[in-house]
Image (cartoon, rainbow, N blue to C red; front, side, top):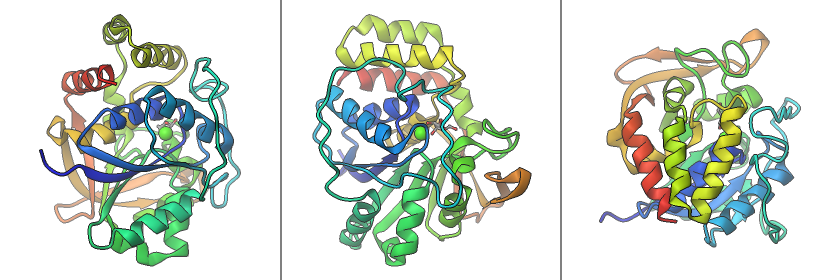
Length: 299
Ligand code: BDR
Ligand code: CA
């Protein structure tokens, strides 16, 4: 097998973030260097706690860092309507949560500088605040970043937070604009593709019947997600692309992110063959759900 891809996962768990993290941990194709948390779906402290809950569930030792507690300019607005009061939609056993030994932004900078000779992948599942801040503090990190793969934006699809904007970009549009203007290679998984992965009852029942602690938790979290206004398995799509890109189709474009007015957080594509952004456009849903089930049951 090829050498595993070195990846940092930046996340605001969040139920779909939780499933994405479990998929990554279950996948030998990925070497997860660290989890960097950021405020988004819930407040930062809760995201940091949730990441520890998930790491314990998956029996992993990946270091976890606490990051930016608010978007660059906007106040953080947490609604709790999709991910429940504490972000994971279910009750959890007690877990020890040590103080973060480093800020998420410092960890990203340190790792990128260390990876100049073998650039790493950044997998972004929440608002892009940590990465934008890292780019402002230390632009040289670009040399150590092979690619930024991210869940965010809505290109031809409508928004899920405003009529035109997706949640991660709407929450911190300035950060998204900074990342898209950075010149870094970007692979984007927008709502256009992630909405195709609506959780179906038969799949969820199959997960429940596997009866492992991880499958039971996934069943509980996704049952809560379905009964709220969760929609697709947004964040797991981009992790699945890293593992099995053959499940997706893609198209190139340049993307501009609007930062103010009614259009804040909107991602506007210009489709062109030499576009700097590779956007996922369609997914083989059965293949995606089969991959997810197989990997999750192996944990
Ligand atoms: C994105 O917003 C969050 O609620 C999800 O975790 C996902 O990252 C979807 O718009
Ligand atoms: Ca997320």
